[in-house]
Length: 288
Ligand SMILES: [Fe+2]
Image (tube, rainbow, N blue to C red; front, side, top):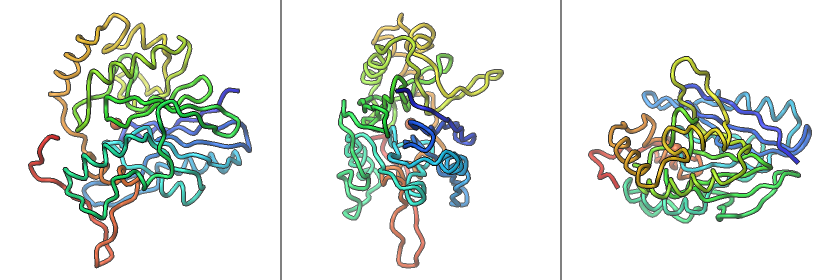
């Protein structure tokens, strides 16, 4: 049985969210939903999830899962408002605990921040099988961009998170704390070992001018044409390219807000005694 998939692009962050379901009136997973956030005013917005809510309602779907491919550094997760509205379990890779420990240290989060993944409803192990309604699904560890990246195989499609981008864009950066370029190469090879026609659904697209954003590509297209990691590229070549390129990249604009929220499964920190919530910004922080 193959999934029905609808993809939604958040233009400010170039992020694709995907809704995957088994049939009209059936059960669904929502992957990588985006909360609008203006870092200059601190205002949040539910506008990016409005079309997702509309689809779920129009198709009469029951949400079983809200899946995060990783703790994103470029957008805030909208998992909590979706869960409040629709139900479902928020899931992420079990190695999120490593990411929580790293950023707890970098942000000096203190004892109130649990570093055991307990903010999430489910932590996926590598190779763990699960169901989305009548659809068979499997979680695969994809370390490299971060230690906790996962891909979700649903039917014959794979939601790859930030491992691969479109062939003309390449691959995800590996210079965030816990990033590992050799690990990303091995993770990508694991994806590219699937059959050539397998569709790979992306978390982002940053198209060159003249090309419209694409939500998916295929194993065959990536093996043939990915500018960073096609079949002709060795581990050594990839690592050298990736590490040199990463030195040229600025931090994402929403890095610190996004990480603080996303390692809490999309929740903001607890309100302070005046009832307001605040985010931290480390000054001249060490790199790892
Ligand atoms: Fe990412």
